Image (cartoon, rainbow, N blue to C red; front, side):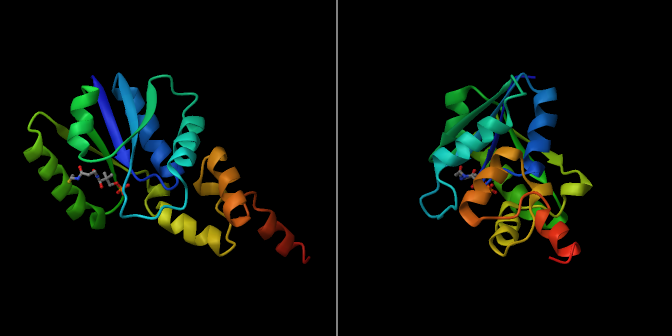
Length: 173
Ligand code: PNS
């Protein structure tokens, strides 16, 4: 099925993203997880941190590669010889923006198709920004993030990543 590119900010990569990477890796010969370099955004994690966390989360997926790009996604696709863009759809609210981007990318490069993966229901509410908010406020994000990301999140926020906070509260400490 050729090469597919899964682009995004991945600030940071979540279990919802990883679910899509794993499913895409079963369909396409190669999947490139491509982190966008966006000078207009101020990410929590540096590009190197984001790339490293994705790499560590994909070690069991031999046909998944990690990269980054600036400028137009379609130019990166051309450079990599990829014909398919993968995007995840969580809810109807995602659709309008995703539909717009898919049509624009098709206009810019007619040889490209965008393929949408519907998120599993357990991840339908998950977003990087929501996870960051919960972690920054001391909430437990253990169930939402790959192990490599949890470790980094704990460094950034001292976030509870093991459920210990909830357990100790129940224990009355
Ligand atoms: O994870 P995100 O922030 O929803 O990802 C958005 C992304 C990276 C897919 C989108 O912003 C993008 O493709 N940026 C590259 C610039 C570009 O090609 N823009 C025109 C496409 S519509």
